[in-house]
Length: 346
Image (cartoon, rainbow, N blue to C red; front, side):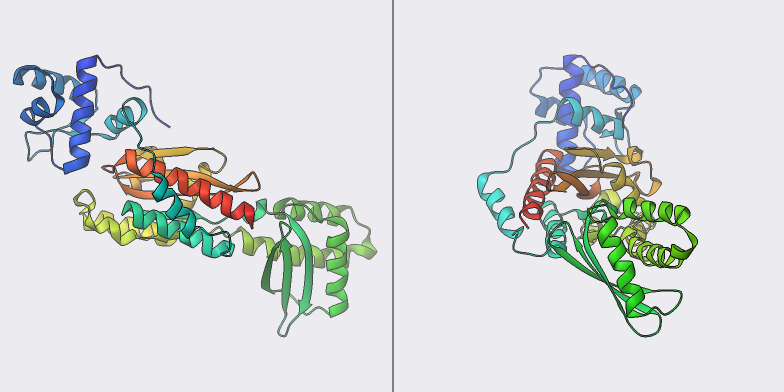
């Protein structure tokens, strides 16, 4: 995710840590006098200025044109997070309140929306969560019922308990008998497979089957493909994006508009979360580390969540690079763990 970090001596390490903590707290460029007072080190203003110059040469801090003070760069934040940050765990009362809001008695969609809302309300950032990837969900039973106007009602049992209904538009009308044959074939041959795996197997079967069976197999592939296509449209739940309007760091209206458009279109955000899908624990993308220009002025803190031990989605927050990482990281981490527990209990 990041380049090799520069090595700092103790003095540079202490002053960079002080500068970033002060900037996160105040949002104002930090000058030598403030650093001298807050660091607790007996250093002359000239010495501090020299250290600041060295840190600037390393690309860890920069000097805004309108101020004599310095602010952290994305690389400066990376050094801070990787080598200086002391994360504050949530207290028991806060964890109990989160657990109460992520009640296993809620259905899966409500749990996921609740997690995104919790993240935005507690952190005052934008909470994001990718719904569980449907191609990673196992089909336990399927039924097809004919509707009018070349439409089919699909009823699926996913992962033992979850029932999903889908209305599909198909190429022609099918009789109840044809749909029953298709459902019987899937239930007899493909139960327990993930949706993507199921569709791949069906296509292989179609190529190998004899001519007299190809009509049935084509029906099976068509309806199963449409089921998969609907489920493959990964959705992103976003809550609290208007929180971002309160940060001076994101006050450029053109950039803010582009960021909101990215939330609405969802594609880039989903691609970023998809990269986090198979990684356990908290991941942090600072500025350009995300790989998406629209997020160059933002930090994204994510964690994957699971059900039954299988990673199925990613949640997190988006905010300016100047966020209280020591507080945000444990909130994202515990929310992911509590959501995983709630989904597994369902």
